[in-house]
Image 1 (spheres, rainbow, N blue to C red):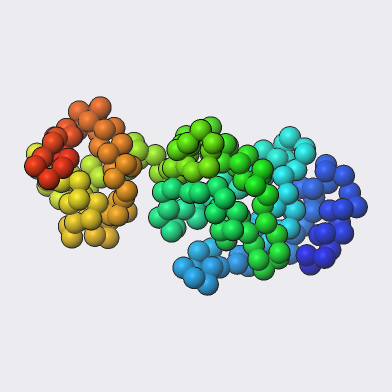
Image 2: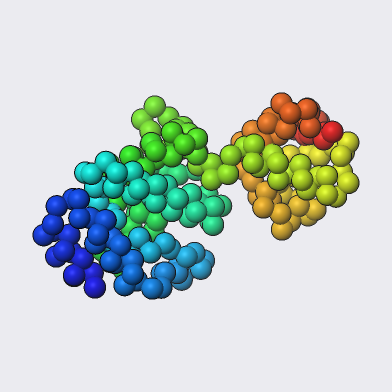
Length: 210
């Protein structure tokens, strides 16, 4: 099946890329699952041309949207908040060893820049070698945290940052294990809405909910 798509892809112009894409999707009935953590890969992940950015504008736009979705889903599944660009190329998300296809460094930069435009990524250095990944925005995290606080009758309570992200009471919640930089941004969003106040405590920062 992959040989068919290789030949088909090489023998037609870029405008026919979507035709091969669609046909391959129909032939691929089952998604590939990660053996490590049961991450379900989208069908495009086993489609060889997916690992080459297409020249057609409309096709590339759809392709980048699929790559952004895959990258965010992978980071969310594995709770990754920072990425190194050089290491990313060897990561399973950009390197499908099964079909021997790897997204180029230039293409990865394009995907990351697209994520930045969407508000899901921030560069940590001028060389754009490391970045913060926000598969859920601070406002969304803040909403989840406040829902938990309200549900458990903890409005007007004070928490340390550690208690919120690593305490026994929050175990099993989506925000459990949230890195401090994202937790602070989430609480700052709640503070802006008048639902929380970040305070200084003896052992670091804390927060009071209203």
